[in-house]
Structures are given as C-alpha cells and as structure tokens.
Image (cartoon, rainbow, N blue to C red; front, top):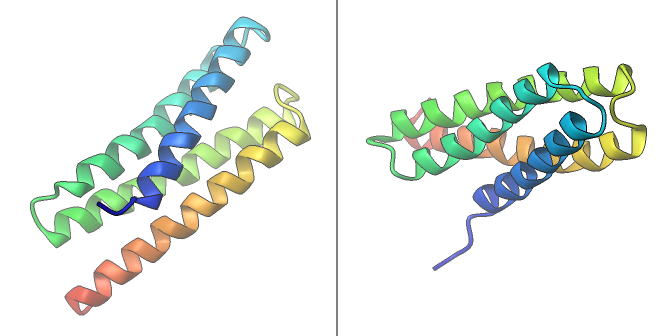
Length: 119
C-alpha cells in the first residue's frame, strides 16, 4: 500500500493545530480564533479522508476544492494570530511552510483530477 502524502501531511498539521489550540486556550486565554482555527483545519483532514471514498471523480474534486477553501481560511486565522501577537513569527513560519506544502498538494490533486475528466 502506498503512502498518501496529502493525508499524512494534513494529519501532521492537524496535530500541530490541536497543540496550538491547547496552548492558546490554556496559556493565552484566547478562545475564539483558536476554536475557529481548529474547526477550519481539522475539517480539511476530514475532507481529505472523505474524498478517498468519494462516490465519483466529481465528488472527489468537490471535497478537495472545499478543503482548499478551508486551507485558505486557516491561513487567514493564522495571519490574525500572528498580527495580534498570540503567536510569534517562528511559530507562524513553521506552520506556514507545512500549510504551503499541503496547499500545493491540494492544488495539484485538483488539477490532475480535472485533467482526467477533461476540464
């Protein structure tokens, strides 16, 4: 069985986001953005898992496209956490590089799937 790099990377990022949520809520007493962040990112991992068993290629593309939108929403929240100094530049950068890697995989996956359908 081959490794699904998107599933692996998105899971790894999910763990980091959950740990960030724990830190923000326990140490910084920040609850709103951190909850929104955890919801947006963990839904990506769920969508990637759901897409594995999509009913059709169109369903697969749809789930991946929604995951791409959620990834964008996640970055927006990370940007706000950085600008409001809830996270520092180093924390942001380490998350950003993994986020960017996942984003590139999502985009490539969607493009490849659409080409197979002739879009």
